[in-house]
Image (cartoon, rainbow, N blue to C red):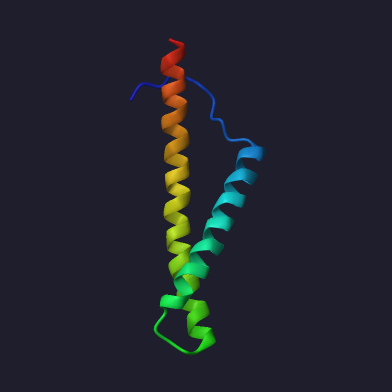
Length: 80
């Protein structure tokens, strides 16, 4: 990979936007997943629903970061 020496585009605003998106996605997944936990114990539902939603939120965060990198590369290619 060639390094063009461009600075990273990580700013405070992008971190806040990422945090809001990932937290929102976490809660969305938690409320969707909790009905699929095979238990009647509220603590187990909270635990396994939260762990499942956490894994999916981590994958969502990675997808957002990959999208940003690809978008930045495509925009730089258009400028050349």
